[in-house]
Amino acid sequence: MSRVVAFSDDLMDRSKLSTSVPGVVLVRDAEDAAGATCVVVDLGRYAHAIPAIRSIVPTARIVAFGRHDDHDALDAALAAGADLALARSRFFRDPAAAVAP
Image 1 (spheres, rainbow, N blue to C red):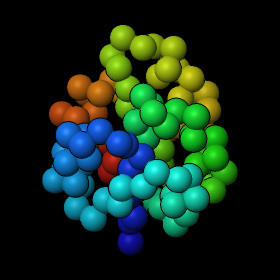
Image 2 (cartoon, one colour; image 1 turned 90 degrees about the vertical axis):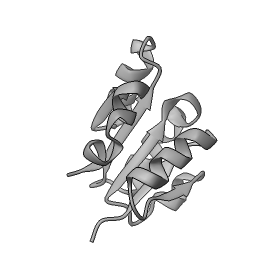
Image 3 (tube, rainbow, N blue to C red; image 1 turned 90 degrees about the horizontal axis):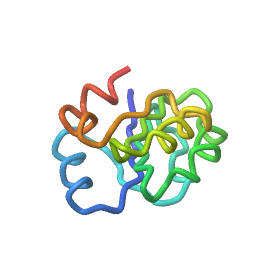
Image 4 (cartoon, rainbow, N blue to C red; image 1 turned 60 degrees about the horizontal axis):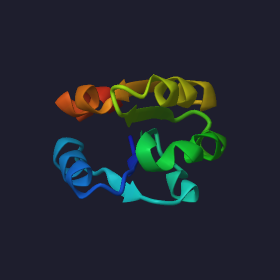
C-alpha cells in the first residue's frame, strides 16, 4: 500500500495536492515522512529537508518542485537525494502522475 506525504505550506498547492492525490498526508517535519512510499517537497520552503527525508525513508520516491527559473534549486534537490525535480507548473499539470511509481 502506498503512502504519499507532502511538504508544502502554500494553501493553493495543498488544495491541489489533496484533490489530485487521494490520501496524501500534508506534513511539516521530516520525521513525519516515516513510512512514506513517496514524498513531495516544495523547494521554496523545504529544500533543506531533503537529506533528512532521504535518511528517514531511504527507499521512498522523493519528488521535488520549485520555480521554473531556479535551476540551481532543482539541481540541488537532485544532488540532495530527490528522485525527480520539476518546475512547479509541470508538477501541477498532473501531480498524481508525478508521484506514481
